[in-house]
Structure formats: C-alpha cells, structure tokens
Image 1 (cartoon, helix red, strand yellow):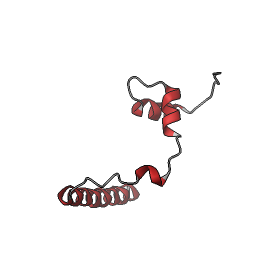
Image 2 (cartoon, rainbow, N blue to C red):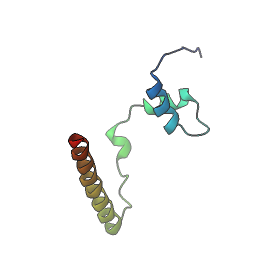
Image 3 (cartoon, one colour):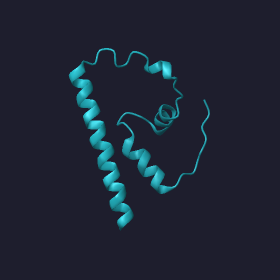
Image 4 (cartoon, rainbow, N blue to C red):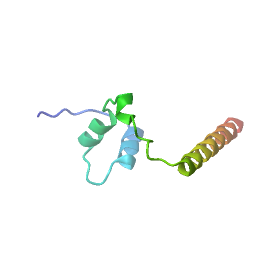
Length: 78
C-alpha cells in the first residue's frame, strides 16, 4: 500500500494527537474516524440496559445539555 503526504494545520494535528490511542498510528486513527457506519450497526445496542441505568443516562444527558447551554451563554457574554 502506498503512502501520501498531507498538510494539516497545527491545531488539527494537536486535536488528532490528543485523541489518538497509544498504539494507533495516525493512518489507523484517520481510518477509524472516517469509517462510515450504518444505523443498523447500533441495532440492539441498548437491549441489555436496565431501567435504572437508562434513567441515569437520561439525567446525565439533560445535565450535559444544560451545562453546554450555560457555557455557550457565558461565551457570548465575554
């Protein structure tokens, strides 16, 4: 398999580097990040989640949304 040299901005490189797993090459990471997935890949993913964990997830999601909105408003006020 051949190789290509690409140019990316420093901030993009830093983002990729920050989320790269220790044993993963940048090529492997980019392959993973650009992999197309079907909604069918997720079918049944929640089938073994009990009601209590589901409610915890919903509560956490609501708090995260609220927190991000507060952060967004704070950024606008700067």
